Length: 115
Image (cartoon, rainbow, N blue to C red; front, side, top):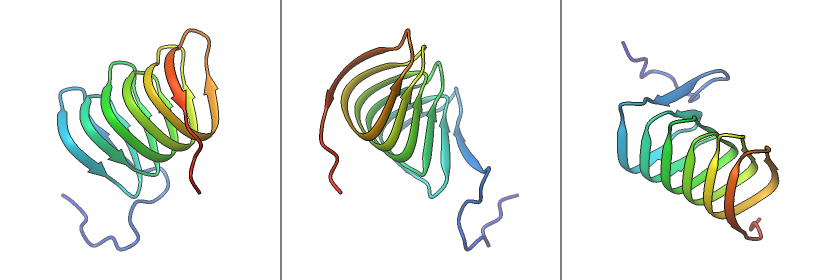
């Protein structure tokens, strides 16, 4: 059922799903991508993160690329951040590049990203 013999981690196209009926309190770490459809109260560290429309995250995000379509309260440390028209963000943003679509709700402090 689960392939535990993989030595190279996640491959392109693979993503871990935190489904709509899941609520996680604590840290979630993945070498691959994560799709958040449920709720996380804590920290997510991954390659790429997608926060779907009905999802909520309270805490911190560390990712290469982050797309917020749901609600995020906390801190994002990401190479690129995109907040879609359904996204709601309240917190601190540390990023090299940001895109905010028309209709998104953003209340943020921007911080210089450490190298």
